[in-house]
Image 1: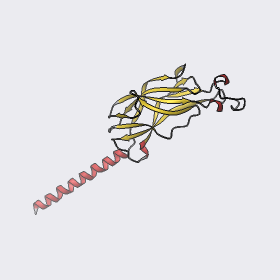
Image 2: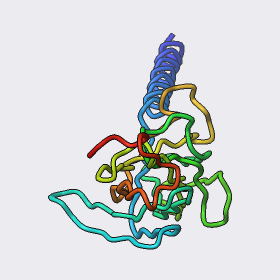
Image 3: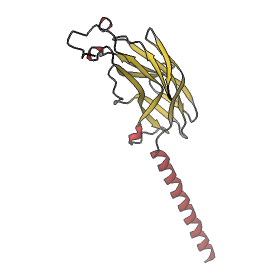
Image 4: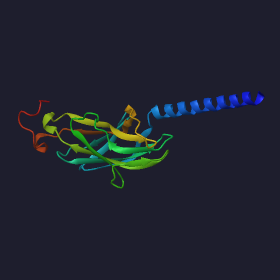
Length: 193
């Protein structure tokens, strides 16, 4: 009799522990992955760039080059407890009038990047510059974040966390150029300003 009670208690304790582990695993899988974009940063694909701070914001001003590709390189760090695989850009990206998100690659040129917990790797975000003919010469555009397609712990969860928005270490900004540097502009294509 005493043995059967002991056996039941041990079974009950094992069942409770199993339920707690499962609940913890589900909670971890449902929490948002922790990827962070950090410096050092670099830019290629423009003739001029400058970095300045406004309050708590760091802005990187780049010279617009119609039809050119801006290549912005930064460190991507996994601050999560599970490995994260970045599978490139998500389909939906934050809107920007003068930049179009075209690609994300690791230092080796691959579009897939696996980061173990605590690991960092350089990545390059490619941004096509275009559309200056739709803005006045004094307007501009920002890129402040990128939306990545990720797998956490090697699994696509089917949750919204599969697309993860990561704030860039600097806010990228470009101004719409004067008509001479915007070849597709016409006398009526640009709003006054």
